[in-house]
Image (cartoon, rainbow, N blue to C red; front, side, top):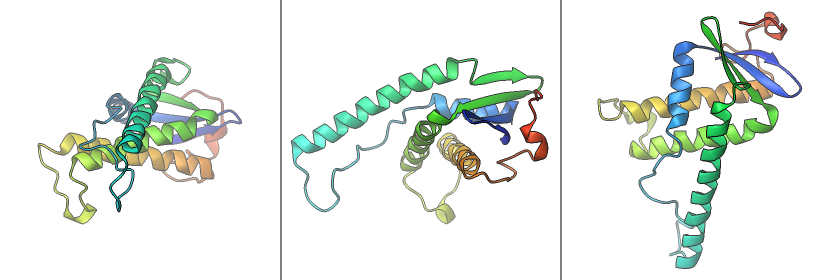
Length: 168
């Protein structure tokens, strides 16, 4: 994923077809069904009504995100094929939201893997899908964060030509 252009209203990235397939497949897994709901507190036994409110609120937030994500992915202004590559346009006002969605997917996948430490994890046939989603989301989060920071990195900017209006 390379930053092609930074505009006042959006970031424009170019992705190869395989990268785009990874990105879309990861996003289509939203929301991740986590093994257990988040706890209101780790120390004290939470009030049951407060815990229920937290769970309901998070579920509603995920439902809203899922609807917004579907609309985002269906909008041809955001994703379009250009030759052998895909152009991904992310409006600046959607970046924080997309980072949250990617983080929900990444953390949810990590939890489904049993919260492994990086140096202790073994990819197996049973874990490869969650591992791929976790790593893919992390990669795209870093690309978005690099774009926000104005960094020219391999996963960030395509260099001086990146400011061009030329299609990929």
